[in-house]
Image: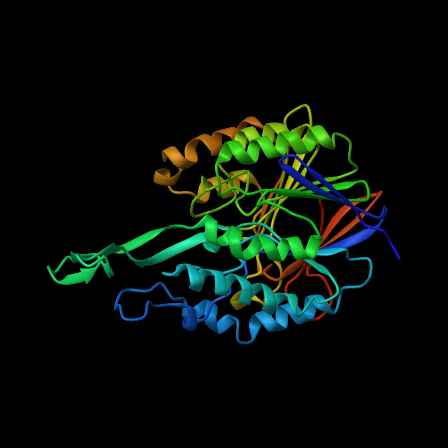
Length: 376
């Protein structure tokens, strides 16, 4: 039996698995677990943010996707990585959010019972959407009433984030997988390779300090994988600037370690390879949105370079405060590869060995990759 060595460090949790020179890792992007049963507040009539499209994709497409990926797994796969937005969220009550998170985990884990299922926090995983509450003169909780555009009384809505419920519900599942205490930022070391699971939705200083301490503890690695829901480099046609907070600072650290970034969020798979003269970073964005799975359409490239991507952006987007800086930052780097893909939704299997890291992209249940991309 292979021994698993566990190290718990101040502010950093890291696990050292048995040394393996060649192995594979299954990677899943956004999966947005959804069901109408989690929505609503008993006794209070209010607007809900329920997605029928995501609920429908979980009836057939997602089971097909998970089944197809599970068939390709063997003992050389130490773990399955999910890149955030495990759930759709937008729920009113803490109990609903916790149950949705746990139910989503159990639903996915059933397809990979013999593999560790590891994940990072997505923005939808902490979404709150429900009635704003107050107390009446007797101390009883009641909804806040406001006026809509037509002057009609309606329940006021809270639209925010709840990281505390995520931590309470989801982190114990992660701890069960790894057999040690973890926070929303944690690291897993497999052989000579380091996998950093980064929380881009908590206080940025906390996550950056974690990142620095992790590299101080593990300065030498064969490959470094930075797992984040929010990308570090602009790759979204809609909102290029929706990136991990202080992403330029993150990149400056990752360049020193020739890092591979695994991200999601955009629902548009992409591959970016950049260098700053001192090191290189590869960013792969993965999408597992089920309604675009197994469409019968061939894998394609919608943008083959940064110029093509940039020309499609509206002037308003390019000049917005949120996007302008990150687009200019990309232009300041040496861009070796900048590709956005179409018909590439499904799952990715990373093939990792001394020769490099390849990403096999699967978009149907055939068992044959639609494309293979060299990451390192």
